[in-house]
Amino acid sequence: MSSKGFWFGFFMGGVAGFVAALLSAPESGREVREDIRARGIELKSRAGEVADEAQAKAQELQKKAAEAADEAQVKAKDLQKKAAEAAEDQLHKVEQVVTEGREQAEAVVTEVTEKAREEIEATKRKAADV
Image 1 (cartoon, one colour):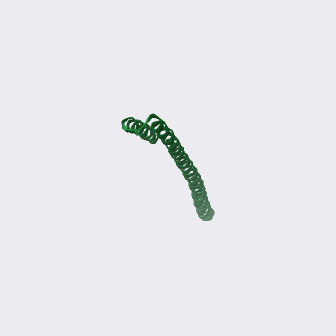
Image 2 (cartoon, one colour):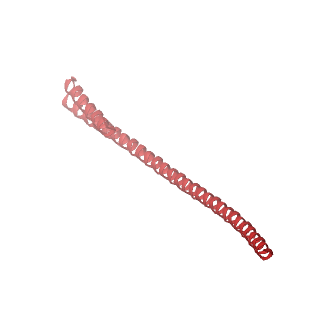
Image 3 (cartoon, rainbow, N blue to C red):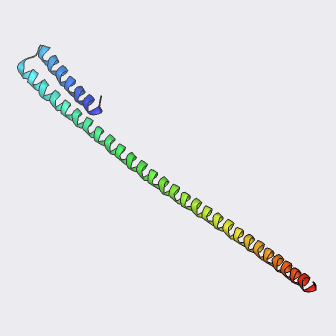
């Protein structure tokens, strides 16, 4: 049951109980009318208090919801920042591995080229000796 429905039922039950009590009480018409007026004022006051309480609770819940939304937004931005930093770090590592691989490949090519030149020179010398 919703809170609004509960308070409406509570209020209507109070009114019904009040009317039943007045009608069964052995008082004069003037006293009954005066009681009805006094109780009506009392019920109106209580209804206003209940409405004020409900409004205060609604405002409190709205404030808490706004705070939770702000907190979630901050956390989301933090996660986004961390993810971007992690991606940047991984990119840097990949670039470093590629650079190291290129340097190693260049060293191997240089070494193989030198060995090939040496072999060519050795072969030329052998061919010249023959």
